[in-house]
Length: 157
Ligand code: CO
Image (cartoon, rainbow, N blue to C red; front, side, top):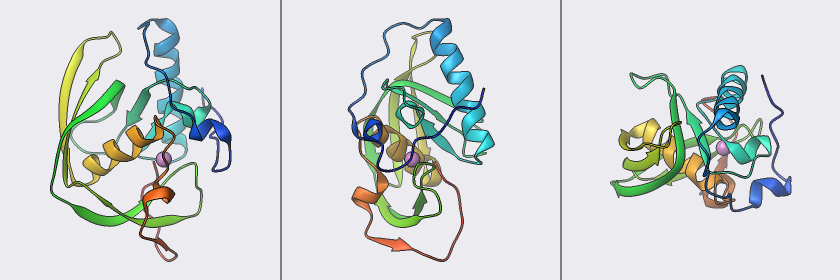
C-alpha cells in the first residue's frame, strides 16, 4: 500500500527515530508499504520517518545488482573517500542540491528477521546509505548541501 510521503516542514522529519525491536508482521507490512511508496514515487530510497513512522527502518533500490535493500537499525561502520554530486529527496519534491558524501560506505544492519549483516556500497549506493540513515536522526540533505541545483532531474530518496 502506497503511503503519504511527508514533506520538508513536517516535524516528524526532524525527530530521532527509535530502534526497531520486534521483527514481526507489523514490520514486514511497513517494509512492503515503504517499498511500494518508494517505487511509486520513482525514488531510490525511503526512510520510515518519511511516512510518519519514527522507527529506524530504511529501504533502498538504486537499480543495481543488489535489488531492494531493507535496513533495520542501520549504522555506518566504515566510510572512505569523497564524492560531490547532486542529491534529491522525496520529502523535498522538485528540488536538488549539491552534497559531498563518502565515496564508499559500509553499513551494519539487521534484516527483516533481526539477523545482523553488513553491506558495502560505492557511489550512488554509498550516497543513498548516508542520506537515508541521516533521515533516522532527523537530518535532511538540505542541512548539508553546499548549494541548490536548479537544472537537473535525477534520483530522489
Ligand atoms: Co530523503
